[in-house]
Length: 110
Length: 110
DNA sequence: CGGAATCCTGCCCGATACTG
DNA sequence: CAGTATCGGGCAGGATTCCG
Picture 1 (cartoon, rainbow over the protein chains, first blue to last red):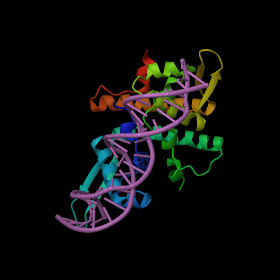
Picture 2 (picture 1 turned 45 degrees about the horizontal axis):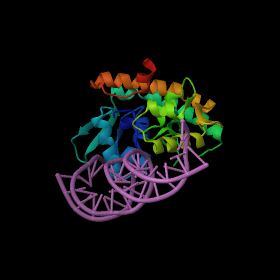
Picture 3 (picture 1 turned 90 degrees about the vertical axis):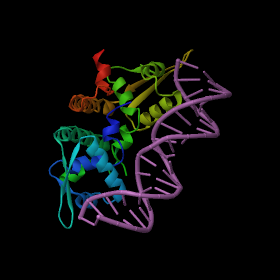
Picture 4 (picture 1 turned 135 degrees about the horizontal axis):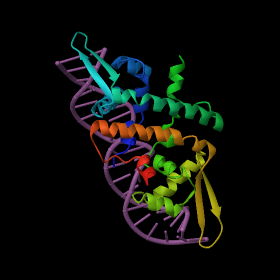
């Protein structure tokens, strides 16, 4: 079966997509922003997103190497959806009374 | 970590939530609508959604037993988000050229 | 009808080490 | 800096059986 879960499911995809919502970012920038993910998992997830057409991988052949990731047009279209999901998450958080929810918007605040 | 993935992640949650968007449904109705899920998985997933406060479980003590599931207010608020996600999925599907994507909206058509 | 209880399996995720 | 390669553990997901 082919659902949205295969595109944005998994532990890191939504977080990464949200990170790229305003600008392209280098591998190391992404890793610094999400320290909990291992290098190999980050690579795997980025490859998944790339092969699904949600992000673009631009290689700058120089020393040291530089690789930038950015959203594709179809990936850009997903951002408002993630925004809404995050807004709902805040609602839910207040409703439940928990304060430790990690949401894309949390990053958007600073 | 506590993210939206723990609430609507997993293989069946979004499908079930969407099924309940317009009315309460019995266990057997849900199962008929989603034949691929096993009975035990359906039970587990419904329990998860219930304990997360997204759906309500109403037991009618009669013979034969009858149990109805419906969205809670906070669950209702999630529906527009799923609608947007489904709309994006249709966009993505046309963009990629696949026609076998299973989306909530597919059910909304009939 | 709507479960509960068990057992099992695949693969997602991650730890670690090495490289152009 | 931005990766690969290898090796597993653990948990989500599922098959099966039994029950009020």
